[in-house]
Image (cartoon, rainbow, N blue to C red; front, side, top):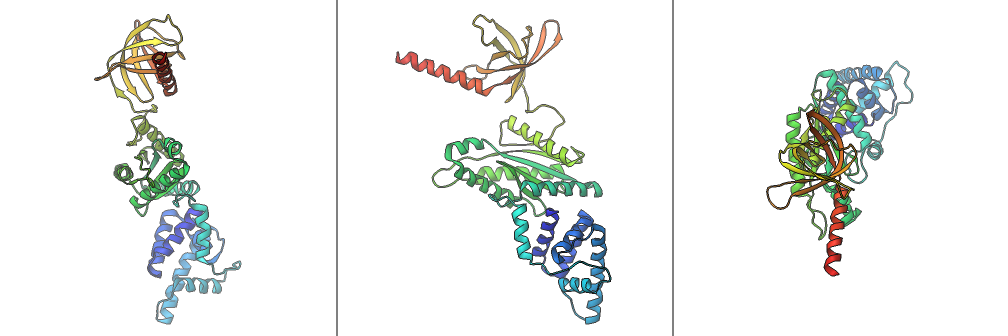
Length: 384
């Protein structure tokens, strides 16, 4: 309901006159159904009406206004007309009264907006998403959802401090808010994650907007004081009904697309794809050398890589390595020394005589640990 209350207040603030207000409120009510009428009477008259009764009253008020204009021969403001109707209504109403819209707006603001970034919060987004998908089902419209995540935000906080991180969050939120369209809803989802809800928007148009936001953040987030930092975002995009049947599925698929963007190297926008992989993979057929860790006498096997991503590598060889074993893979690259990858075997599939597909998830912590150990040994040998 907070979403509808805010929509009513937004209509009130944006409308240039009472005819414009009535037109805007009626338009949104056609999109969101009878609960919108319920919110109108709750805000303007502090009345709790059923959605259907509120709809009936709304159109009665409009007819009452037309009648008053005809009798008086001049335009009548909407709010006085509303209260004249309520006062003369034959239906029993419980204490209709004037409402301080500014005070009410401040209350709504505190429950619907994020305190740090001043854009909508997770609670408001959840309600807005349900309303948008429900409306899209009813009228056959499209809805697109964009998940955005600031790349390496933990490193920014750890390096410069949380006050600096808060400033980055505010700058990113400000850019999203300035780049989006008036009908879109931007919210802070949590931490360094943001969402952009785009009603009546196909995925291709949503992607164009998402890319514009990504580029703008890359160019315009500058940090504070004498600590400039390069800030980028990754994004995942999904659409209803193209990719999902429900609001929860839409969120899940947009989040999955975000993981694809992270896995593809960050600072890109990825569209949701019907696949279970967490990362975007690239075909890469090269000879590799494989060795099981933890055993000094373990042999080195020759194999061939098939595809690779930030999260792991798939290769083939003629030895079925045990699932769960820790291995290192030496992968040749075009220039310089071979790339050393370290991780855990998570998949073994036989597809021919003495040929196996082996999937390894990469452990960056293990690679960092071994690299640190090698540097320590080098320093110790150099100084001794």
